Length: 69
Image (cartoon, rainbow, N blue to C red; front, side, top):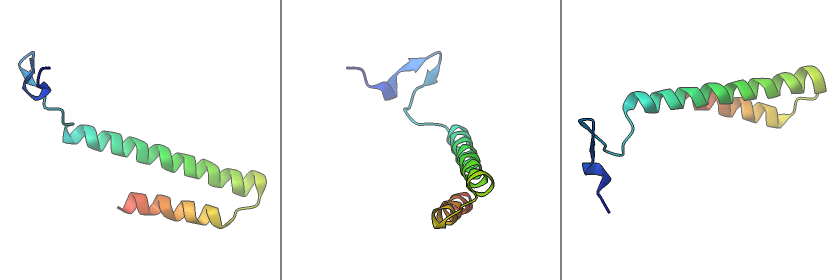
């Protein structure tokens, strides 16, 4: 088997590692998506069901902590 860290394609060395900008992009994307899901859940629980619970407080705190990290 060929060592993928030494393959050369179009003069670009394939290292098997993601670039820093790719990591930031994926991280920001999933953070935004998860916060939108939390927001949708909170709106549903407060406006439609009208019974927010302790689990909603915990998920909100987890979302804020994920952003602050």
